[in-house]
Image (cartoon, rainbow, N blue to C red; front, side, top):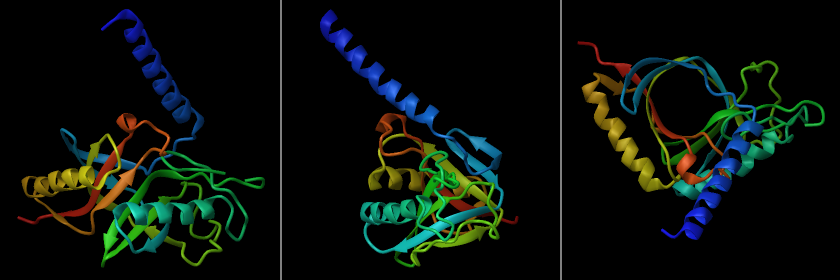
Length: 214
């Protein structure tokens, strides 16, 4: 590679990395708390604490449902709630208001149940079901998810259906090896905003599980 092209390439890569790091630094990152019970390569078995999520349920294909739901949920955390509070972002999709911003946490989850997509934003740990702002939009539901055991696989790259399916199958194949059985539906979790370069994104496939009694 000629020096001028090498320098140009390094410059572009440096700008992309700077933008990604600037975005991460600018966000207050709060993620769903969990304890790693077991780890095997990109597979993890995690114990999650109880969580509050803001959720909406939509029909449509994989990408369409996610895009529609994001706008509905983002409207809620941006102040379309009974307290007119903006919900500040943590990792991956999060935000805040003039009165009090409500930080979001990571990840943004998407799962299919009975033919419909359930897309949810995890709410910050500071909230309980008693003090969290109530949504004005009836399409947004707040619910408490109890503590649960979750199998997880982490991968980078785009949010495409094909990448999700590839990693979902990997996770499915790990269940027998780890003596686990499903206790819920597969979940697609995204930890970064759309502005993060695809090769730096953190994505996960999650599945609530139970141990198989021998």
